[in-house]
Length: 486
Image (cartoon, rainbow, N blue to C red):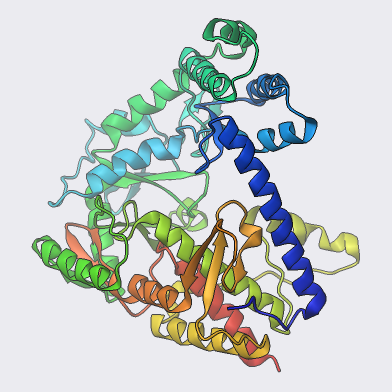
């Protein structure tokens, strides 16, 4: 079907087609040069460093640029080659991930844990901070690990030994030199001389300290971050947290089943995936549900729980869910462009500076507000109805004549995602009916989680942590604004 028109006018469509044509030309150039250099086309060539400081990154980039200049190509060919090479740093292990790995392991226990809040265990608790008492059980509000006279945050990286990072950097650069076939004498020995030893000479003292605290403490305490993505950790007695989780889920009308029912549940879910011919994840597992508290309440010794589902291994292959999530996000982006209302989309880090800069523009901040319990008050059936109505409204407004709605996601550039069938082979196509089926499956079928030795499910609201939960909440807000704006 032809690309959707209308709405933005002919100039908008011409500009989009020009961008697609330029992208196709650039991709062909990169593919031709990459094929001559034996560079794999599926993903860009990555020079990956386990833990990298800004000084180390600049040194690595300088070496990469020297290699590209040594290929004896023209300037525009060197630019295309450089665009295909990325200097990236793998996500380093941080304090939060260290505790959560052990917490997930112990939260999957099938029997109620034993309380270890006794005087003999107090020295172990005090290693992580001052100990408080909640309902007769130990708690740390918040975890306060001291290192070199400073408190360690949950997001602080834990560097690995410098020798290991430097060795991996040399290995990545050696592989890149072999791929580029550059005419120079770059070897592991010459690269090791080009990387100053003093820049990589750091010890893993902080990493060892945090791990030595986490290993004995996690079996007796449930340690989680507060305010999903926050920088503070809170520790509670594992037995008390087990009981709190069960009481909370019962009060929120979750349906409980025995763990023995897991085989039957997995078979029924797998039957739905086979029927829809979705790629099944062979290492799929039941998501773990846990509670996190609100930091402001916990600091005042108050408890305000929020359920989070940790979907580590989803039922459907993750790459397929990512494609569908990008198609859902594209739908939201088009709706925001077409609906006659004021939408300012900001991420969390950019929200606070924007609010504080309003007085500089002569604006007066009257107040701030936030959604309270939004996910718990949105019904999945309402989301499915809004999803169908919004696409039908867009098709009428933009005069889409296609008999089947197709979402095209670009493999290299998210900005080139479009409604309609993309003609380049760099696009992945997803029918809208398939998107609706995946959203329905995520919100109403695949809702089972494990917590407190049982399987829990609730289909009356949007689950936190699902692959389409955030987009569903945004659609509910955006389409709700459309219904109220004429």
